[in-house]
Length: 222
Image 1: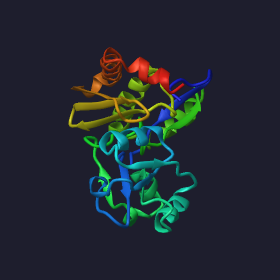
Image 2: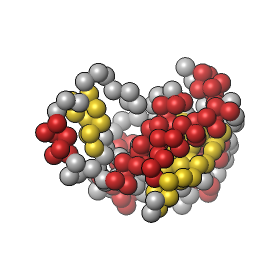
Image 3: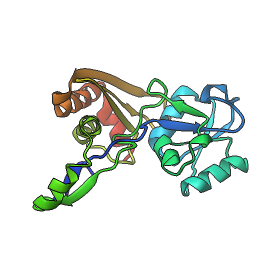
Image 4: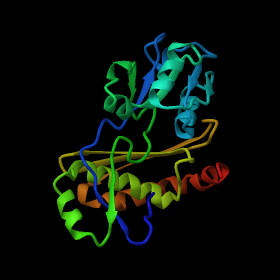
């Protein structure tokens, strides 16, 4: 959540796994190679929208269950391919299941994808001090920008919103999108600035998207 209940806080963000989405398919090497009518499984509206934006000729079907269950459904031919988080596969030691990594020109990740947030009581100074040792400054800056964008858009996990920040030195680049569910409309924006401006960059990206009509797309999903 972008807003915590009273008395709780986000204390640390450890080093982040790969934030991108993975294309999992034993038949074709990339999403672009799939024949028209092929079935792509995902339970994410964000992934569904961006798949259809890229390939409106594909069939996106609901795919649920844990990671192993989703992979099994691909192997059994229930779906031709699945879109899942790279981080989930890597944390389970299933990196070899990744057929292709979907970069942000194809699919913008969910805000804070691949990151862990350590939440504690806001008055627990001892625990906060301990967690400083596992907090990663790069992940913290990136996640701060992405969460700031999400908060400003007032979107939740059931809204097709993507936000991905990448920090290089002190330069932060944030790419964000809001999509219609059928993928026919994809609003995108990019911002670049100093790492210290992460919160403001998130807000600016949200304002850019709202100026393009994001409010109507977000309202349509509720």
